[in-house]
Length: 284
Image (cartoon, one colour):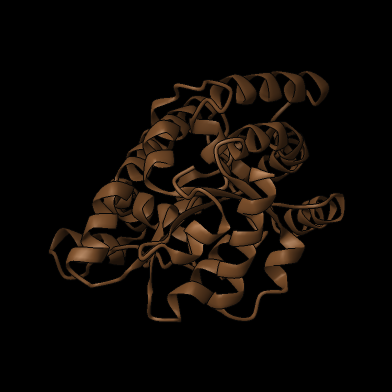
């Protein structure tokens, strides 16, 4: 770890952390809390994916849909309207919409091969966005004068790296720049995330081998056209279970805090104290 004990962390003039864990456990909320102090630069990996790396693909998809409407087609062909996505740190709906869900096109699904293609593009974009972190650490300090830096990662970070490989190049790079911090949820959190997802299923990124196995198992048990929402609901609980040991392996490079501890935070100073305690726990 780049901080050798809680006091080293407290004394550091440049505090740099990488938050990771399942979506919905407080990564973006905590990043916004730190950003609000005026001393922390907030780097959102999902935002970088949806703007720098997949922004054109997202806009093109919206244009394809618009071209089906005669009035919009005429306006687009004459350069009379502009179609772009409006991604923010808190609203990643355009990216999720582009990733899509596999299944019956009549129910809003994507053919599985097209879904796999978009998954591969998302993986490339996520790795690139993660590796951009170093450049943004420099920009945050040199251009904007922020002393501290928080990297708000995607929930799928554990899918695009190999946590069991001590020489994983992406994790090596990130671990040399920042302190990895796993926000770990409890069983109750997992059940709530599943309930929340069941109410409003959202697209996700999966490792190819995981997706292929899930698709094969689901289609064998449910012959006929696949309901996209039913498939991703069925797959989500599987993904949560698969991701936990991968997150835990990543946490060996850093520290672990609980979602309950995050929810109790009130100020950035509270967060600094929490990380100091987590480092001392790890050292002990």
